[in-house]
Every structure is written in C-alpha cells, then in structure tokens.
Amino acid sequence: MSLHLKRIYEPKDDKDGTRILVDRLWPRGLSNQDAAVDIWMKDKAPSPALRRWFGHDPAKWTEFQRRYRDELEKNPSAVEELKRQIGPSDATLLYGAKDLHHNHAIVLQRFLGKD
Image 1 (cartoon, helix red, strand yellow):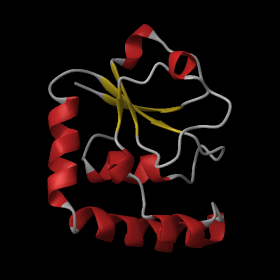
Image 2 (cartoon, helix red, strand yellow):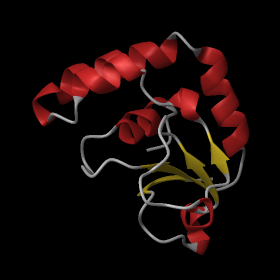
Image 3 (cartoon, helix red, strand yellow):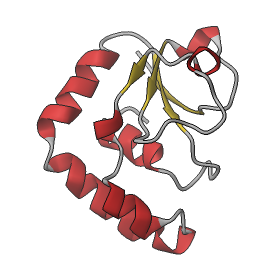
Image 4 (cartoon, one colour):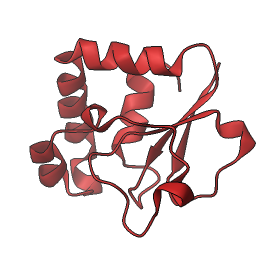
C-alpha cells in the first residue's frame, strides 16, 4: 500500500487508488465529476483557526506542522477513520493548496507514517 499526495487540480490517474479530499472547503472551480473524489474527509484538515493563522506562509511552516500534529493527536478517532478508509490499498490525499511543499496534506501523510 502506498499513500500519495496530489493537488486536486491535477488530472485523475489510475495509480491514485482511492482519492481522498482532505480539505475543509470544496476546491474552487471544480465540479464533483471533474474532481473525481471518492471520499471527502473535511474533519482531517486543520481547524479553520489554524488554517487562517497559517495563511500558507512558509515562514510559519515549522510551527504550523507542530500545531496541526497536535490537532491530529487530539482527534484519534478521526485519524483511525482515515486509516480505515485507506485500508490496505493505494490511496491519494488530495488538497487544494498551490504550495506543493508547505501544505497540510504533507503533515497528514507523515503523521500517518506513509511518506
């Protein structure tokens, strides 16, 4: 099993496996059909307050990672639900952020131990 990361705006690929959107907000300009999302897990994304604080500022990246991991640790049932959805097959965590190197999906993938 492998867990991939992909920006939701990239085309679907057969290698994606189960496509799991892990953003609280639906991506702008995409229909359900175009997004090809199998599961939308809003509650796995950072809290609205943390998302606003971070604002995708790379200077806040280290602290954002710590705070988001803290949120994940405080919500073990949500993390376990995500692990069940992924199961033994391949899956892809989808996110909408433009920054490929500073986004919550990276932290989530590492938290799950699947990077």
